[in-house]
Length: 450
Image (tube, rainbow, N blue to C red):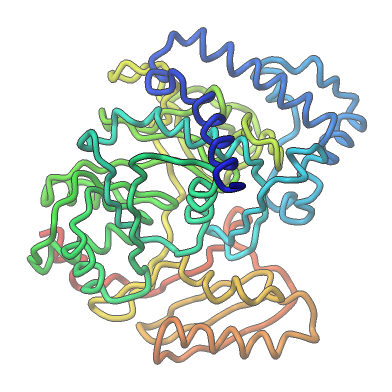
């Protein structure tokens, strides 16, 4: 009975937000801008009343939250970086009823260092409704539930979100999702696709590019889905062109992150990503935090105007991008992110037919909470150096042994040297990649481009 009540309540939330979403990106700009400004005012007021970090910030800086009703005023709030949120994630969680009951999401993302962000249930369900905005780019048959094979880390953020959808909503034709491994030989992935014959193949962009390059280079027969979608990290332009040319399948992508599940969605005109500008304010800034004109590259800064769990305003994503100076030919009025850079991760090629995506490493480090940061460096196909940072010296030796054992369980028969310490790792721009490969890609990569 309780499960039924949950689903009725959840469906009511989805229906309340779903009205008009399929056409939302085509509305006159003045309409979605008015919605954006209303959400800016509501989100800043909510943060000032219920979020410790912003309550303290506004008091110390003498900022009047009632005066922040536009993107220009919102942009005056100081920039926020990931490290600040990592140090004290609870300071950004609302003390309201929605905040106290919000759902925590933890990931190492592309940095090898855990980050925790909370999302409230209403915003999670609303995100389900806002997914209709990308409906015209899906290219799927109507009247049936699509079968999806996804190559991503099992039990990751996406799985947790879908589990919440299953618990709180009832959908007559819910998509069937099948997980593929991102740490096994390519032939296993190929067999899974040919056996399941999915309508859609999704996954981490770099993994899918490597998989399809392997297929093309070796002339392997592969079931053609209706579309391919990638997320979390990117494909190279050459990889996208290769897949489109050899497989004849549309390739689409969403720009999303744990901090904001709806940032942008790719356009069928292949001109970039349309930004969900009324629920996620996005701008591009230079190294001094000053907004740059459209057409110039810079760092992406977002403000999630939907979430009432962790409130993040003027949050530095660490990604680089460029806004299009001209409207998109598709007719949508949402701003267009013409270029997205900095979301490519190093793959770990172990054999000619096996690759491990860096996100698979979290299956090891997610169960070792005393390790707060890690980076795996591949020197040879079977030779690795693992750097870890522990919470204290007492657990250092134990964590080093556990990490080495976990890596051998994941990667197989490899040589691994563990370097453990307490000093934070550092990288370009303050970002530490979880994996660095000093090996070039195997021969099939070059063969696929001939």
